[in-house]
Each structure stands twice: as C-alpha cells, then as structure tokens.
Amino acid sequence: MAEFLNNYGFLIVTVVQQALLGMSLYYPLSAGQLSLASPGFYALGGYIAAIIGTAELFAPWRDLLGKAVFPLEWIIAGVASALLSLVIGLPALRLRGIYLALATIAFVQIVRVISLNLSITGGAIGIFGIPQLFESRWGYIWIFGPLLAATLLFTWRLEQGRIGRAFRAIREDELAAEAMGINPTRYKAQAFIIGGTLAGVVGAMSAPFLNTWNARQGTFDASIAYLAYVLIGGTRSLWGALLGAALLATLPEILRPLNDSRLIINGMVLVIVSIYLPQGIVGALARLRGAGKKKGVPAGGKT
Image 1: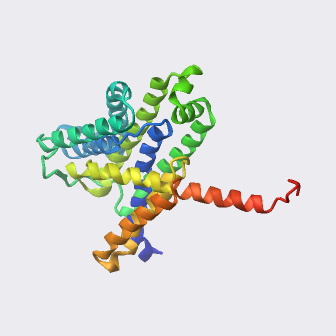
Image 2: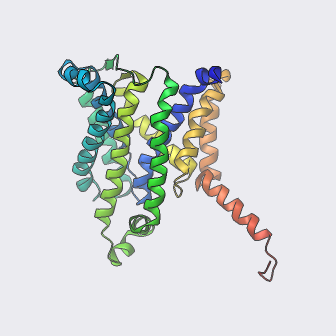
Image 3: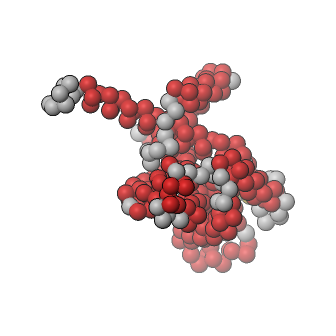
C-alpha cells in the first residue's frame, strides 16, 4: 500500500484537485454562462498562499500561527476571490455566449501579465520554496478530499433548492425565466462568485502542494482543460466534473509508455467523446439506464 501511494499518490490528489477546478466552471455553466475565468482566480489564490508563506513581511504571522497559517491563507484567498469575482462579474455578466467567454479569457490574461511584471510574485520565475503542510504529497488528500466532498454536498443541496431551480431556468431560457420573475443578473452573479471563490481556495491549497507557483498556473490552456472536464463528464450533472477530471488527468499517465503518441490518442478521445457523447459521460450513462428501464416495461405499461 505504501508503495502504491508513493507511486500514484500525487496523481490521485491531482485528480481530486482538477475535479474541484472543473466544479468551479460547473457553477457558471449551470446558470447558462460560458465563463473561463477560473484559472485567474486559481492563480490569485495560489499567489496569496505563496506570498504569505514565503514573504518576510508575514514571518511574524507564520511564527505565531504555525500550521494554522494554512487555513488562514485559504480564507484570505476565498474572500479575495469572492470580492474580485463580484467586481468583475457584475459588468461582465451583462455579456452572453462567446462575448462572455472572451471577457473572462481577457481577465485570465490580465492576471497572468500582472503576475509576470510584479516583483512580489517573482515575475516570470515565480515563487519557490513554499512551506509544506504535509511531508508527503499524498497527505494533501486530507484537505482536497474533504473539500471535494463538501463541494459535492453543497452543490447537491443548492440544486435541490430555489437557487438551483433558478439556475436551470436561466440556462434553459433566460427571457422566459425573467418573465417568471427571476432576476438573471443576480443569479448569474451568484454562480460566478461561487465558482470564483472555489477556484481561489483550491489555488491557495495547491501552492504548498506544488511547492512552487508561477504565471503558468493561470493560462488560457488551463481554461480549456477545466472546461473539457465538465464537457466530457457532463454539464448537467454535478458528477460530470469529477468523471471528466478522472479521465483526462489519468489518461496521459496511462498512455505514458507510448511517448509522444499518447498526445494524439488523448486528442482523439476528446474528439470522439465530444461527437458521440454530446451530453458527456454522465448523460450517456443516464440514457443507457433509461433505455434499460424501458425494455423492462411491457407494452401495456404495467409490470
């Protein structure tokens, strides 16, 4: 067991981490928003944790709080990301479709350019030697795992309530939802803020996990990767991001013996799933389950 965790512990934690980042995009998508802003908030949270953990200015805090400084970093990153997502979200959410996607991509690029040109963020080199919370990489499952479980429970409860019904109504037809008395801007802002806050907290947790932080953590490529998790897994289910991250994060490792050919196969899987599973893996499984139930019902409709 110890050998298994040494070999695959980092990969398992990475899958959970990437699932959380996919969930940060799931919230805006559930309200009909094509937002790609999560890498920007992820990078912001990571820089907050990295700066607090390494800068001399915060040395008294670290000495006083010890390991308790890590939860403080998560809280600060979450609050900062929530405030920034509110400031950005209210004007940006007046846009729709591809225009909103372009605006959020611009936000990610702005964060990246700023981090490349500030001395406190280490510029292009980044920040190294970030203090570790656990001695082994596998130990980080004890913070990412509970966060994922709490996120899934929170999402399930959210979707069962009034806010979740409002999200679905806006996603299906925003004009009809507004005619029914739903304020689209309000609920879209809530979805955007929830996603941005989650990404910021995950970033603050990821900085010690990766032990280094730089501008490569928040890029357009990362936006596409997180979006792929949700699209491949299924945009209509809270389990979609988890399944998509599990597939896309582990596939390159499984195909590693194929060297460069693994990238071709990875791309082929994305294309095939996009074409033949338009509702994602969860949607395909739901259709199969529904077809199986129909086969078990006689023509008269009685069992």
